[in-house]
Length: 497
Image (tube, rainbow, N blue to C red; front, side, top):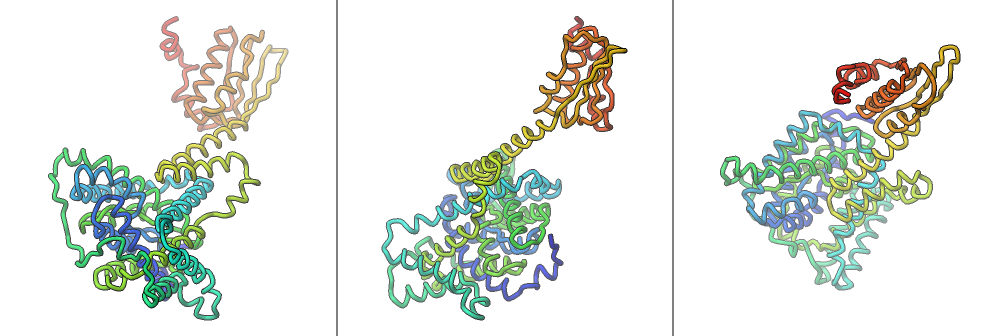
């Protein structure tokens, strides 16, 4: 993948980044308010958090063009903390979340993304696309026909405007949709739900606020479990979103730098009266599809968000929610991996099970971490099962020396260890047994235990046993954990009998 220079990340796409940043800022407002309501805090907490996180991450994040702010996944984890202990403890938990994420970046936790298969990423993307669409349904239920008409008109503008010569390529169609539908609603006096109906917008700039909580172990005991959960979910969603944006833009990102950046951004949010946040796949997709590619788009989104809600609130309040719903439906459609539906007929059953399980768990629980964990676990089990079938053996007999030779080929680990041990004929009337592992590899303690079990059992049957052909890695793990050539260890295991 292409790695951009710092100058390119900031100034390589200025017009596209500025216009995309405007669209993202407008789309961030209702979501930040909604997520604040979910968490049980004042709307300004989510708005201040979105401003702080987006602005800071523009400088310190590891993925250019990715949008980070207050998110629903994080808000859901805060509900109990806010309800039982209040806003001050939420701010303290946000600070600790940032510290834990910075620590994760320094221990290079980003490498864990290498264990997430492409199938899990696709399942994650599809689940988020479904959740984004489902989040729009409250705005489309129990409403007048005007809302449906505006939403359909908005989608029409979004998909048809780019085909207009020249101007269609210059201005992002989501921005055009928001402006046009707002003008239509105001000019025609249509009574529909607007951004102003979502909640009270703040009228002051954020101030430095240190959490008013006791600095003792009791406080730490309260906030630590929440901070661990917030840090884990935040990093997971950020890493997954970064991977998706990597693919969309054919550029690379630094996951460990992103972890540190998320931590710094959350500390800034906690010090400004905000809540913890992370990367947002929906807003990031809006940014990319609106032409945003660099860090400038993220900075513009964050700064403009604050300017609009504090100094332009009268204009922002009149934006119809139907316009933003149309934009988010576009995001949902664009995020969903439609090729994965075709793949249900052509891809292996195990691949489809992993993808669908990830989707169902994420959508069913609204827990991104649990869904990805389920996908990774299933993918690992299917992989282990597949690899275990690559272990096989052959045997030959040397009559002159009454020697049975077992030749093993392939990978011997926890899922193939039993088949390894069952390969031997322990009651066969031979004097010697040679176990040839020249073309085999022992991966774990279970494999070593299977070898010990086989050798000791054969020797108990009166046979001379020799293990040959160990490669360096196999010899190391057998020497360290094996007991079949250590009489004292065998004595301990057998209990002196």
